[in-house]
Image 1 (cartoon, rainbow, N blue to C red):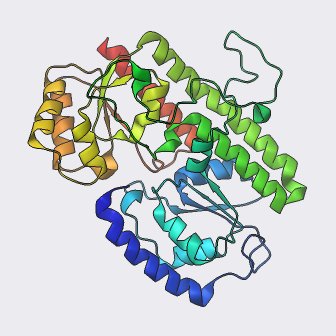
Image 2: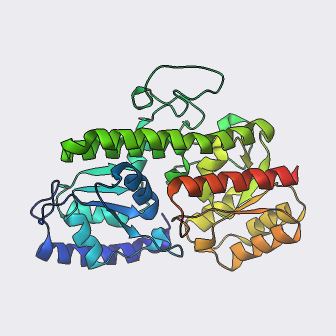
Image 3: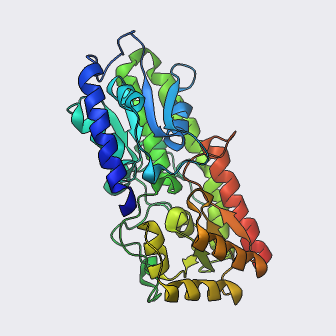
Length: 348
């Protein structure tokens, strides 16, 4: 969470609490006042996953859907607060990323059922992304019943590249951008299916079948990241900020961006001149295969890094915090993984 957004979030919280005092739902955790189930997601990333599970039975509302939006600094509106208050289920990132959701939920006493992606990530309650999928081994265990121990499940106690000796580039600490962790996306889909099954028993089988189908669709993405890990193991890459952290991990790549640079960007502060110079030199000297770039939070420094990469012929792979227009989660993640693979292939 960018420190510079704290004041905005605090102001948004006060506004939301005021509105909720006037129009809070009396049916939190069940059908809304008009008898319909309402699923609300903080961003259209989680909204897309929830919609894949809900199918045609429920229309999911995403509070942040603009491709140009930066959820870190999003200020919740009174309508957002009312939507969460009246929701049958809220699906959000958590981990301090979309803090406005926690603020609103706290103000209404936590009565609304939720699926929090970051909590699932931390708990390790993942399904095996390769269960029932032929990667040289076989299993008859249903995907929804198998604990994850595959390449998409990570040690969340530091994310230090497995202790491979990348001193100065450990990027330690918690990274809340868990929508790039496929096992977490899978866990969210199954958690949404279970919650909706309780709220709408008649549709339970539909929700569980949709979650299973979503699980299968994730294999196409993990196949790409596995191929990258096989063909470009430990290949050095750079990022303007660590949005794609879990994509980088699953692909077996080495983020060599100076920690001081990415930490400053993530915290909403100016990187030091030394870290800017070091990052620029990595790009000018072509010491990385690709640059991962977040257009939604670009500024003068990040644009300068992109220009340095492009002038050196280094492919730029764009990573986002909300869905690009016209794409669902599976399409978006597939396109991103394939762009990363293509960029690394061209650099090798």
